[in-house]
Length: 212
Image (cartoon, rainbow, N blue to C red; front, side, top):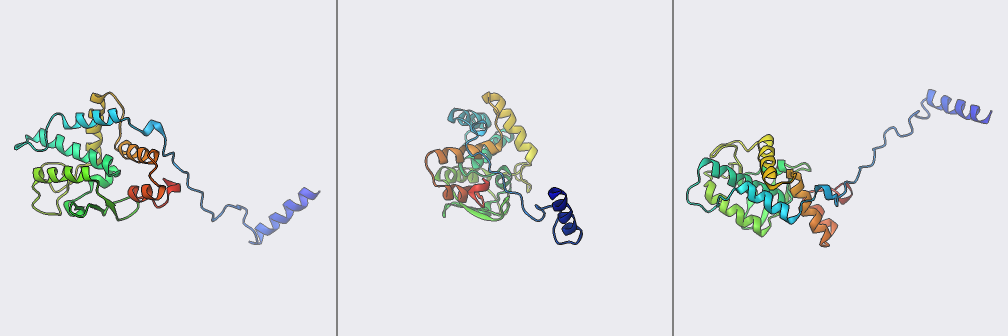
């Protein structure tokens, strides 16, 4: 009898708009925290080296002349290093234009990002690599993409194009790799070294370490 009365009471509340039949209505579901230490997404130092070596294919960035195929390998190598050394998402790295790179100030200013425009610190190793890449590219305008689909082109390398070259390099290196794994590897190793959570969040562009 008690259960019946309670059920009838709540039915009356819902019918007269005094109570929602769904107590969770209007409440946001909590964000699931991703596992920063998911080892299935972390590359070993040997794997990182092998994949980057496969991407470059023995071509030097400082070569005086680069054939089209060699130029493409250099582009892919520098792009992958942006994902790894600066912990960029693939889309963020592919969208970079020369005006976004402040080599002197040591900063990357991202306009295209999952979490909105942001400025990140530019690691020294990446800054040196980008200086070499600038010398190869010889951009006529700061509006040109860092990683054009074709040499001298105005359009950046597409998502599928980058995925394809990574798959080819991973096959040669004997491992599985995605662009996001470069980012995940750097952030995980930094966390293991004791880098504070707020520093990781700032570099990764997370709004909160809880939703990393």
